[in-house]
Image 1 (cartoon, rainbow, N blue to C red):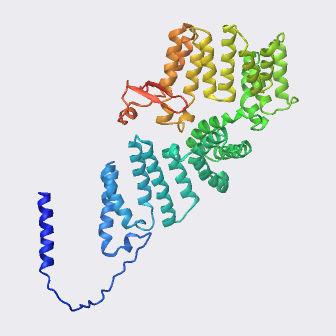
Image 2: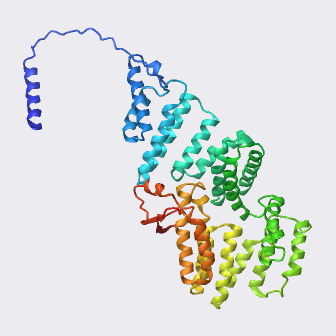
Image 3: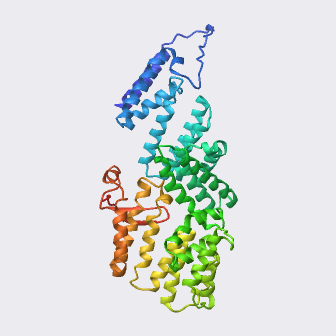
Length: 473
């Protein structure tokens, strides 16, 4: 049928052509005056004349579809309204704000990374056009940084996001939008650890954020709920930077850790840990708090000095030089043949990486080394579970799906620990009971088409393990 129609059209064209009268006269046609339509780059509804009704109708219809969360139906209508009147009513940035919702929704449906990158690029273009039509501002840049961080962080990268937020912080200081404090804190940490910024720059902005948080707490009045969330996340995340010697002032370490010593003034593990942290923080030997801890050590914990590399490693640890201590422990591990001793000290190094340096991948590595040298020992797996459970701020924003799913592999490790070693069952059960409530809600699992409760799920981030999806209890 299609071929018949094509043949008919060809014949018809030939027929019309053959029937056209032949003439040698030159026909002079009158010039046609071309009507030039003026294109307004940031047109409003009022600029459209006779097309205003079509643009307004598209706008109303896509808004209705968005309310019903019919994103597929809303999208072509949004495109039409956006194309015709990018500035809508001229006052509010409806199209751009709704575009963020649409782009985020469609990106979340993608399983191919290149397609997610396309939506991330589209988001950048959307914000650039918004700036052109409504004027650039720090408020707009703050919103862009927030949207890109929580929706397209993997696609745009931490350096790009850090640059956006740093400009806002430099300009606003203590008036920095509170919704940027948590993501900016995390970006400081990730960028300095990846060596994308220098330690001195990280120190400048981390201490600035500390001041912003202190100012927020001091001025939040009767509504401090948001600052409580910020405290819990940002201060915990910025604590990772304690891995760098004297990153914060001495008082930071004393204010944070000295109370642990006061609560347990004869506990040698606490005494050694708090002393090391204050030394790490650059506190002077004449500091009264440091002297008090030292006296407690001399009275309760002083032992016959251990000789050899292990003794030297312990000395370095007690002085707060964690890196040198680990270097000495590694030298010892290369020569020690007693697996029981190896396992004990490898777990100690794992705890240094977890508790003091806060390098979770290395902590896991040493914990697994310890487990390989002592059969049926649950302690290393209890520690690995703690590493995973503490990764919510690393693998996500501290709340929500990405931060909650880390509880699944953590609970796996605690279940495994108690299955091979009854001596850790009490601690493992306590941790499981605590973290079961932090797993995703059943509706969050149900809302994700590729996730089923009880089904297999791969947790990425630094964990990179298969687990089982479970709802909070």
